[in-house]
Structures are given as C-alpha cells and as structure tokens.
Length: 405
Image (cartoon, rainbow, N blue to C red; front, side, top):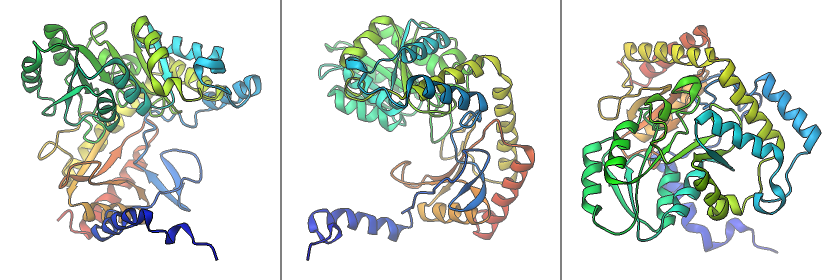
C-alpha cells in the first residue's frame, strides 16, 4: 500500500505553522469568485457587496475590453509560444509598450508578467553588491525581494520620513557604488501617498537613481490616471517607474517605464523578462483598450474619487479607526478599518461576509503585529445605495462584535 503525501514527515513543519495560524485565528481559506469581478458579485455561492477588489475603474468586465480580447484571440490565437527574447515578441506586445510609454510621458516601456516581477526583476538587475538601496520601511514585498536579490546593501528609512532618508544617504554618500531611492507611489495597505516630489529632490541632490512603484497610483492619481509622478509634476525626474496592468487597468501584468537605454538593458538582463513566456495576445489587446478608456472616459476617475470621499467620511462618522492614529492616514480609495488584533479582524471579516459584504481581513505578516485591519477599496462602479447598504452592515456587525460601542 503506497504512502500518501500527507503522511510523509518531510513537510510536517508546514503543518505545524498552519496549526499555529488556526490557533491564532488568522488562518484563511481562499474565497472563490463565481461570476464577474464587480461591485456586487458572487463568492462561495453568496451574493455580496464587494469592497475588496483592486478593480478601481470597473474595467475587468468592460464591453470594450471584452471585445478587444476576443478579436485579438481570433486574429493571433491564445498564446505567444515563447519568451520575448526567443520567438515570443508579437507586434501587439510592442504596440502595448509604446502605448504605455506615451501615456506615461517617457521614452520607452517594457511589460512584465506581473507587477511583482516588474519590481523584483528591475531592482535585482540594475544594481549589484557594491550598491545601496534607500527604501521606505512600508514598501511593497516585491521591492523588498528585488532588493535582496540584487545583493545591494539595504538601508531602510522610516515611513515617508524624508529627513531620515537623507540621513541614510549621507551615511553612504562617499561610499563607492550607485544609490537607489525607492518608494511606493501609493502604499497598498494604508492608502497614503508617497512623498515622491521630496524624494526626487534628494535624488537630485545626491545623484541617486529615483524609482517609484506606482501600482496603486496608476489609473487613480494624476491626469487621466497617469500616476503619482504626474500628480506631483515630477516628469523627467524619476528614472524608473513601475506600474501594474492588474488593478485599475483591469487585466494582468506589470510594466517598467523610463529611458530607452533602461528598457533595452532590462530586455537583456531582467530575469523574469528573459525566462517567462510573454502575455497572451488577448491580454495585450485588453490593456491597450484600457489605456484608451483612461484617455477618453476621465469621468470614471471622477466617480472613483466621489465614492471614495463619501465612503471615508461615513466610516469616520460611524467611529471607525480609518488611519491617522496608530497608522498613516489614507489619502486614496484604499481605506483600512484598523482593528489591531488579528483574530478579531478575521472574525469581523467573516461576520461581514455572512451579512453580505466582502471586506477582507489582513493580519501579520502582511501588516505588522497589532495593526490588523479590514482593507476596503472603492471603485467607480459602486452606487450610493450599495455603499449605504455596506456602511449599514459594517456598523451593525461592528456593534455586534463590540468593535464599535
């Protein structure tokens, strides 16, 4: 009789970790979406108001994006068949990169398989062990992993503390090697905006490379959603701009924008680009259509911010901690409801789901111990009735669990 994998002792340490998560009350199971990603949708057989999606502008199921995907599939097939550097660069991939470069007001762009690989692949390829990275303490995990892979020396500054970042730069100013300053444009857990303009000043002063991860800013901040660089008027001062095609753009992938030499270098040296098959043509076509919509339907962004302002104000009026006390204050459609205790947060999230609201609980290690929260995100497509219903459910459920008095 054969031994099942679950009976083998080699990975028992993983089971022990999972058991500990269950005991702490922070273990979770994946919610399964059964229809379209929208403001109201069906997870695990239950219809819920969705406050958990990154679908900021409602493009995941937009008719024009669907049509673009279908037409590209008919014309080009379902896959590219190879990595970009061998036989997998299709004309539509180049059209997408040119489209993004024009939108972001830069010389060139390269598309990666995800925002994570765009960050990790870029940081790890443009720096080496003699170099220094000056990084915000709350930067995204993909930046942290890329920094580690680069083997550069990492210096972490306090969140959005520009003076501390300058202290870190001064310490290494006379050391050989390049210096890279890196920040999120919008921080994904607290929803606050990075001090891009002030960090650009530091980069200019110390001759450092300036890099911004604009995953949650693209499609949200700046003219027609051009991101934090546009929001701060820092065009021409950010050497490396990273973005995602998986959030406001509504599809899949990541990208890096910058000088033509930077992009040509990444074509030659960025390992995720070199060793991953390129996007299906349907995804590239979908993204091109999405950037057209950003240019032609700015009212989507207006609706997003109108919903954001209303929802934030109402959450605050109800007495929820939405940041600004023990955590940074949110400035964007990402609005955390700070609970603190991990188990209480997960219990709140489950109770909300049972009551008809999808609002995901986030605890350690995604956020620091003691700062667990329900992370809510607004979209342009939520109606006021849906928001009012969600707010009513949040209030009643929080009072039932004694989160609100």
